[in-house]
Image (cartoon, rainbow over the protein chains, first blue to last red):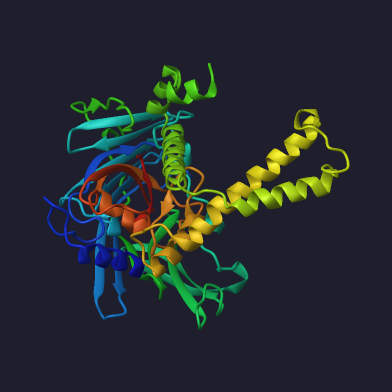
Length: 255
Length: 195
């Protein structure tokens, strides 16, 4: 992040180019949602229907005392057959930019029919992907990037796991664990060891985390919490595109 | 069809496939970016000439190796093909070494990145996945079992700065199409630019 600010500072020192205003922050305003990429979920959970809001808040304190806070929400729905619907707000782009308020993407996965949808409520269109097919994002896009290359210096042997007991969160019983990962001094040029602490509250009933708190001195604190939980069976119409939505036409790749 | 014709007149079938397959489109875009940058590098090095000592050293090494010269007085057209091939390879290696290395040391190319950014860039280079997604710095890793979603976005090109890519000041307010990978918490974790 520091490097990013340095780059922006360097550009600003040269003055804005003719005909353009001053440079904004990285990404700046004006990010625009074009559409979602449908894909199949990694794990199918049956017989555990629920509806809830997943709220994620991040806070980061910079070396100059400045604070960065972000919040993003997702409305989650799952039925007894394992169908899922996720209405995801796009306010969590961070350094990439910011969208207009209330912009969201909707992802539907139906393991019964083997079809996934990505809905764009803004223009009332949807993209569809049958199981085994490849969307523009492709199946690879649904898979998490190569883990080991993404977190260098963290060895599972340096992790300590402890139980936090049981707790009821938003009416859902959950088991808590705290994992403390220590990145030894010198691993990435760090003078002192870095401790990354992750608290997870896992619901065996819902087969998912109902709350997580991750504290990393490099990235700040991220708290994700499931709220407004209902265990009622959701309406099946939520797992298919509304009748007034049109199938999205594929666009050619920009050159 | 020659190689040049192939790359200059890409068959429609390949172009059509790239318009439907993000993976191949990204791969093609990266190849085109690489080609463009190699052309720029080639143009930058066009005024670099090989010092005279290179030819002298090359000839001396060649004569020493093949014991030609005063003893055999072999005509150049009578020299074995293997010898000419070896000489050509040595010359190419020497010319390439002389042309490229001093250029970097004497006149480093202009860049918009500060030294610290260069360090970040070096670390970012290891964080691009095979399918072209670049991890957004200062974000936690994605667990391999995490459910992730991908959205297509039109972003300001200044967003490319956030992942350590170079953007000229003239283009920083332009937009670029990208695919953004969201973690299960809805936060952006990685980005893949489509241009």
